[in-house]
Amino acid sequence: MSYEELFLLEENKQSVYSPSVVLDDEIIARVLFSPKHYLEEEGEVLPPAFEQIFSAGGMSILRLNYSFKKSLSKTIKQLEKDGIRYIGYTSAKAYSTT
Amino acid sequence: MNVSTAVVTTFLISMGGSRISSNFIINDTQSKYYIDYNSNSQTDDEYLDLYTELFSYKELQNNWDGYGGIKPSDKIISTTKKFIDILKDNKVLKPKIMVSGNGEIALFWKNQNRYIEVDFDEAEYLSFFYKMNGIVYGEDDVTINHIPEKLYNAFNSLTTQNSTNPTIFLT
Image (cartoon, rainbow over all chains, first blue to last red; front, side, top):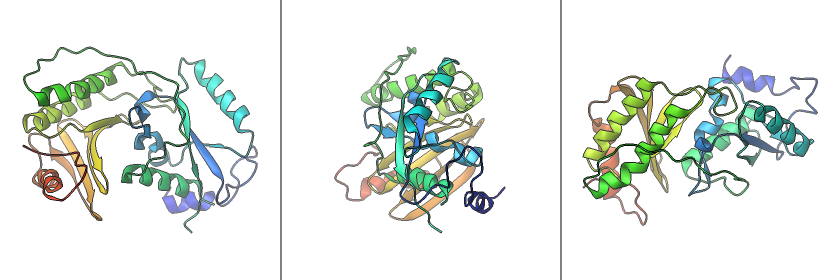
């Protein structure tokens, strides 16, 4: 599927669990589970933290306006079962270029 | 609203030199790895932690990033090491290193509006691209036996341009 087709998909809700389409200026968060995804000295998140968007055609995010703490806690607990540690999250403001 | 658009933007911003650290929360300490390494010069010393970080990738497990990430193959790690050796021998200032969920390893240098990245996703080959002063250039599937001419020139151009904070130089 091309990126153009993926962008079109995101014009509509893709899951019954989704509260709504992501709006401009909405804050979205990417949860990090590996220290390999940031430079501690610089406090900088590295591009591979977002690589899934290219390799998988999209990536998981959390939305700060919608039960963020609860969703974050649930995500962390799920991965802790597999021995994966929570590192932190990085957030950004969403906006459309179309 | 395109989430992908927003995230791609974030990705590009992070590659372009801007930081998105203000909202970033860290509560982890990095593991330490020991490698056998003979240091003969200041450059060697500077590269020590780069080798340490590279070899730490051998310890990664499947799903190491929580998103189904795979570990880099031994061949990719070996290929990266060979090219790092070449950089060190040419006294290129130490790059930073990163690993992605698809098992790819990359070296990168950046300062201000300049960014150089060398990627390893196939044994004995590299790809690279750089963005300097708005100019983007890249090559794929180059053998790792030497520093490609364009890449070498990119390193050198950083030393010839005025910069208050150069991060790359050749001596």
